[in-house]
Amino acid sequence: MSRPQRWIEFSTIAAEYALTRRTAYWPLRALGIDRALDRTPSRALRVAVLIQPLVNPFHASLREGIDLASRMYTTLNVQFFVHHIDPRKPAAIAAAVRDCRSYDGLIITSPDDILVREAVAVLSRKMPIVTLATDLAGCGRAAYIGPDDRQAGRVAGDLMGLFLGKEGGRVVVVAGSRDITGHRERETGFRDIVTERYPRCSLAAVLETGESQEEAGRVVEVAFREDPGLRGIYHLSAGAMPIVSSLQRLGRIDDTVVITHELTPNRRMLLKSRKINAVIDQRPLLEARLAVETIAKLLGRLPGEAVSSATDIQIFLAENA
Image (cartoon, helix red, strand yellow):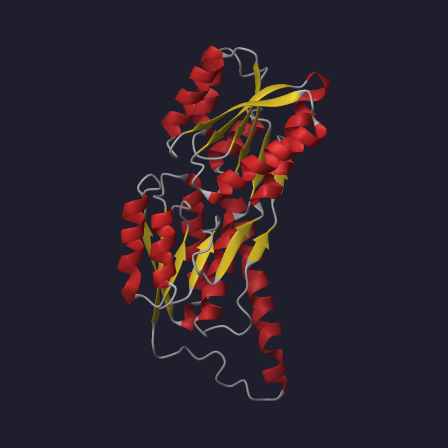
C-alpha cells in the first residue's frame, strides 16, 4: 500500500474511532456527567501481542494496525508489547503464551495446534485473550476478530471458476499450513464451491509451504513440471513473488490463473501488471484496530460488550488495485 493510500485508510479508521467515542459516551454526556470520561487511568495495563515476524507482509500490516490503534487510544493507558512467533514451532509458541502470565491480556495470531490451544486455555483463566485473523478452536479465548475464512475460500473458488471459464481445469492450493485455521477453512470453502458450481474444475493437490516464501515458489515449480496441465493456483499464504517468478521461468505466467490473499505492496504491483488475477483482502489494519478495541473492552477501558467480529473482505482486480 502506498503512503497516500495508507493514510486514506488511517483517516477512515480515525473517523470511525471518533464516531465510536461520541456515540458510546453520548448518554453520559447528555446527562452532564462526562467530565471524567477522557481522563487517562492512572494504572497502565499491559497487553502482549503474538504474531509472526514482519518479513511476512500480512503480519507487518497487523503490527502497523496495532501501533496505529494504540496511538489512537493513548488515553486508555493500555500498552501493547509485540512478540514474534515462528508458525512452524508450536511448542515454542506455547512457551511464549505461558511467558505472557505477567501481562493483563493477550492478542494472538497462531496455528491451531493442540500445544498452543492448551497453553491458551490455561492462560485464559487468568486474563482475557483475543484471537486475531485466524481462530483457535476450544481454547477459552474471549473473542475472535477476523474474516469468515470459509466464505473467503468460496469467493476464491467462484473467481477461479469464472476466470477458467467453460474449459475449467486442474488447480492447486498453496497453503502455509493446514494447522492454521484460516488456511484450512479457506481450502474447505474453495473445495465446496468448486464442487457445487464448477464441475470442469478440480483440485489437483494442496501444497504446504510452512509459511516460507521461497518454499512457495519451489513447490509451485515442482507441481507444474510434474503436471503441465495445471491451469490455476489458489494461494493462501506468503510467497506471491516467488510463485510468479516460478511461473515466468516455466513460461506459464500468461496462461495460469493466480488468486491470492492480502493486498500487500508487492501483490498490488503484481495485480496491476496482471501477473496475478485477483486479491482477496481482509483489511488487516481494521482487524488490528478491532482487536485493540475488543481487548480494551474486556479490560474495562472501553464501554460496550466485547464480542467476536467477522470482518468484511474486499476483492481487488487489476483495475481497482
